[in-house]
Image (cartoon, rainbow, N blue to C red; front, side):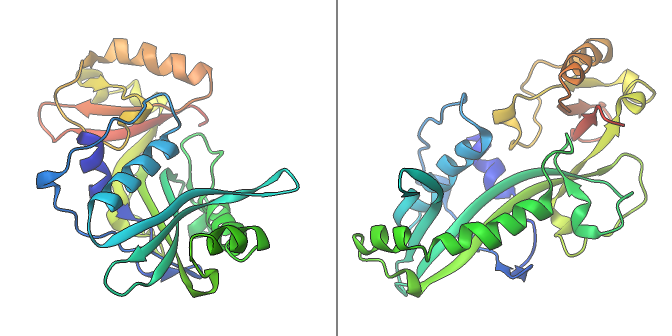
Length: 267
């Protein structure tokens, strides 16, 4: 259940409407009777999140899942897919919801605020993902292929409200001054990122660490893992850096609460 709780604790990357995209308001879910289905850990984290979203929405009584992951093809060429078509159980309002979950570091050396958010390996840029959702994913709903498929489900695409469930965890630079993340949501900040040179120095040399596997990234750090001393953690970090991957680490200092961070290889 830790991944379920981690998902539900995640915050939207912006509030209400920004960039011409309205955020989907996830319903408050009572988990007292919820029994999660197993999710494969060998699939991409994005697909794992889709499983979590689907299970929770299907369990809750607010929405009906009309269809999800609907593939769209034209002359055997894949155009894309629609993540979720939901129907509000009370109002009968149809929603087309595109789901995204991201882990972004914030680079203050970049002037434009929305270009500061990027994946820890600097390959996944927020503004590109946002523009793809708005300018490519949303228009797919009105393609001939989508309208034909949805009509078979008694769904009129023209009556769908389009929203995005764009959740994220943000990481600010280690020991940086308080920085504004507007127009992004500051409640998404869950940790920090550092260079390997920082990681090699005090106070980290006295701490213990855990390098979570990708399917554990959603989780809030907890004690029930195999903690490593600094020298062993550094070996693991170096191995990831050789492949140009910035690992996430959990940090136990015995003084402060458990922390979450990335150690980047590119700076």
